Image (cartoon, rainbow, N blue to C red; front, side):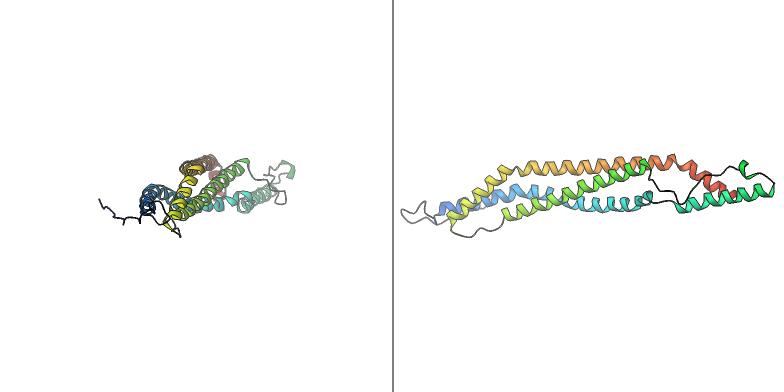
Length: 221
């Protein structure tokens, strides 16, 4: 344990602006603040890094799901080609056009995205928004901690009073509780993303037999 020695103050200056009392208080409070904020800043930095990486991952999923809001022209072309071949076969066999069953696909019809696609994309957008909000406020909290630990100019008494006011500000704004709230936001973002991912996986597996049917029809043709 290192003991710091402070020179004695001049007579009648024991509580003056340059007294050793203020120097000792300033040094001890700075050591306390450094130890106190080291763990909290570590939590904030972890939140900031994870929120940034997670936002990039969610953005890729949103970009990939953007195809759900556009017509699937490849599948539409395959269906129309299948209808055309059926019509040609029916005409070759002398079948009436009224007896031919078609898919009824209309390329010019207005496109309406599926409700599942809208829900999945909405969940992922919500997850991205929560993650970005977490990263934004984590940056503000980290900047506040940096300002809290920044050097204070002036005489020892002024530095001591300023440090005390800063400490009271931390207590008033409840930054420790704010960090816990940011962790909650990030957990909500992760759960929202996983909800959308699970729903997307279920929808994909649910439509898989239909995709097999279309592929099998094309192979038959």
